[in-house]
Length: 412
Ligand code: SF4
Ligand code: SF4
Image (tube, rainbow, N blue to C red; front, side, top):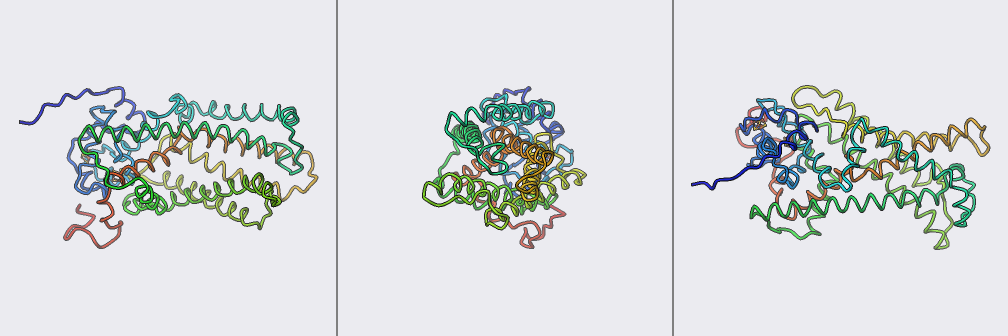
């Protein structure tokens, strides 16, 4: 006789999933259509089991479930669900709540993601950077920093940017590490309790496997209903990566090269390799962010991915960083060494907005959709480590002819 199991539903968590975008989860009747459709399930009850866990409010199971992070929200399952329960959206809601659950301090997720808190989210960096500007000169003198003649640095000095951004990035990094370590431990604890934990691959090999997957966005190749999302996501990923490389390059050029006796080339000329990379990266990021928005707006019907404020705020933020970055550059190359006062003010105001957006992106990293990069990576490493998603590698991308004999995508 089967062992009795006591289920303690967390009704508050069910309400939270519904509020986070999983509003149709109660329609699920456990028919398993979604598990048959999902290219990642490979015979396992995914995402059907997550649907019943969500209906029962089994929070501990869901926030420690790596499978939730294997899903890339293609919404093929939502398209084929006969009840309109939208399992793809339910999983997206759980991912958001997982970030909330492990965030330190938790209230920051509210500030970073809720449309109603947006003014506060903006106000924080504006006040902080504004105060930094007010105390710029006395602190600069006290620390022995001279005035930098470079156009933007004479307004917001490099030492101030490095100090402020370095300090707050370090705080965000520590918060992010605490969050993902707690997540890793929860996944391991959950599998150990279920008696299925097994270390199949070492951590270094697992990291290599996960990184290969990320750089190619391998899983996106299986999308049916939302196939164009792969290109948009790849563009956002590589555009942002290019800008990150250029920022690091600039810091090294400004502060490390002079220590080695090499003169700094900053601010970079238009045709300097780092500047070319920055412009290409910025253009790719703009393309990716706009494509994400257009795809979301255009998509209609059961397989559509509309997104919540959690998704939209992040993509607007990325676009804002790229567009203001270009505006700052245009000012720099066109105003000349002695610009009119009005032009100078416009350039500095644009630069200030750019700094606020970059600051926001960094300090809200562990709390916003940006945190997905970290949680998904950790879940993928865990999946490689435990041999969890090996079967997916045997599948063929959407459009391939190598499918189950006699079964077409239309009849699956
Ligand atoms: S989510 Fe839809 S397709 Fe999946 S088990 Fe529930 S009713 Fe069936
Ligand atoms: S959204 Fe796509 S990847 Fe995610 S569970 Fe549904 S079918 Fe699978």
